[in-house]
Length: 177
Image (cartoon, rainbow, N blue to C red; front, side):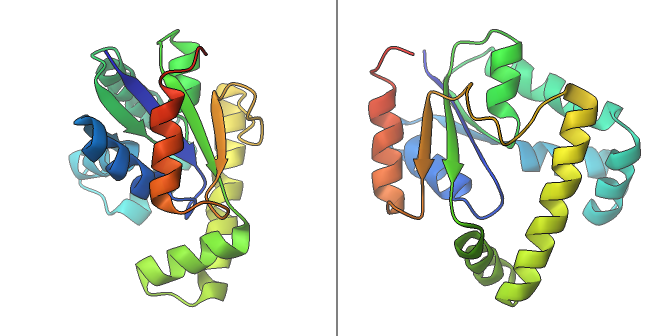
């Protein structure tokens, strides 16, 4: 059985790496952002409104965690999301935990291209989102997203192309954790 968590800040390449790894290994890609979007639909709210709602309602994050943990226990998947590594750690779920890093300017350029923004708009949006998440995750879970000690692999996606990042992740499966 195989379970991989891939986490990182916006624009760090988590989705690209997850897709390549899933394709190479024939695993299901479970994206926490899609689960969050489903929760927004269930509340009949826009994604933006639901994000603001989540800041005041920690039960949103708890429900997201429950759904992701339930899926993680079934194995044979790549779980992508900011907290998937921490969730696996806290639930004592055996997984290869990966954190992707990248310079904030490169991440902003990637987000700008993906979302049709200027680099400056993307940089500002990333910083705002990251500050909100760091505060929320610290308050709710006592997690510091800057602490990468729980991860089996920390890969700089600004230093390596996506196929190399995926190769490093796949090779990481064979190494004792």
